[in-house]
Length: 463
Image (cartoon, rainbow, N blue to C red; front, top):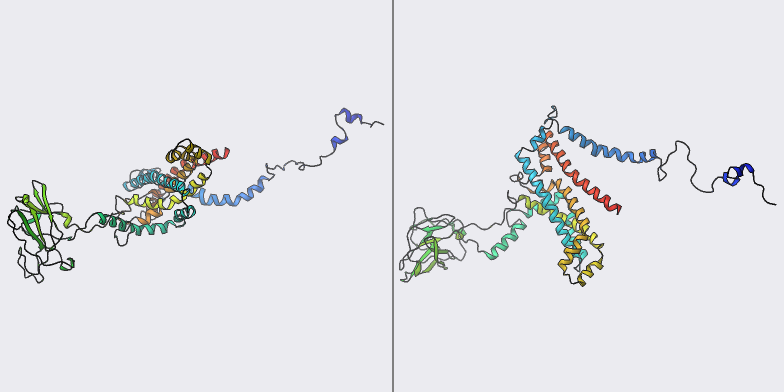
């Protein structure tokens, strides 16, 4: 028999089967039991987020709000001054120096560190011991800013026997340039040989053939003379040349006669003697071991000059920590630390570059520079932007290296905003209003860079 169908059910378009509950699926939601897409109740998610939100508020939101409020009050926080502290920031000479140095840091440090990181990342693909090379370059990142500052304070030491940088500079300089053998030497007062500017000495009289022109000097201690120095000898007169002797016009005990070569007075060998006419050098010679020299006959009628190169002090290298080089020197130490960071990130991006494109370019006749400039760099552009922006945010907060490396007398020349914030608030300035204003300015400088970075990361995530 055919099955009997309930007319009511048939009229309603359903049957007993329609009224049966489904075999699977989530239980029906009752009123007031709303869940998120992942099935988590909002109040449960809020409970898990609450500790993080409390820490975020206590460590980030509250300090930012309090700093903004404090920047509107005077030094001790008792009087409202509005935007006066910000006016002080942009009119004080020391703080403007910090602003200028920060601009130099933001432009130079991230650019150079990223460029070096790119070069190192590309080179590591072509060297045999690439892992060891990366380890050596990245190792400075394991050193704290404090330790790096102490290291580079010693590296930039002025004394070549202590500072590595100047030891190298002096070694290279001495390889190509002779040091003065007699620093501090000078002629006797009111003598024929007199100072002529720039550290040189020139005779008042003019030289003549056949009459020796002796050039006595003083001011050289006996213990500063070369160990192989011999007694000076009078130069024999020659009718077709200008001759003379350069010597130390002093005998131990002070028994010698000024201007006369007495027994026991030492010769000065290797001293350069120039014959000058109308401001031009017409002849030159160097003294021998016995202090004598010989100029050609063309030197007759000329004044004799001992140039400053004979007497200038020993070359001690470059004043790395002076007012002119202090900021570039500190930036160099920062690059030493962070170039490895840039290299690692860029190397990771380089590993994802399709090798087929590089090989195809080489097959088409492109050289390595063209491949690097036309393919590698454009494909690495997103990574390069990440590294550069990250380092820009980092250098806006730079403090440790400047505070440690810069000596007290040039710290004002190397000043940056983060250091000025500390100095104004706690380092003797005792003006937390101005310090808070500097903190607000730093926040405003960092925010656009952070917003740009976040937007770029979101765009990358949607791809």
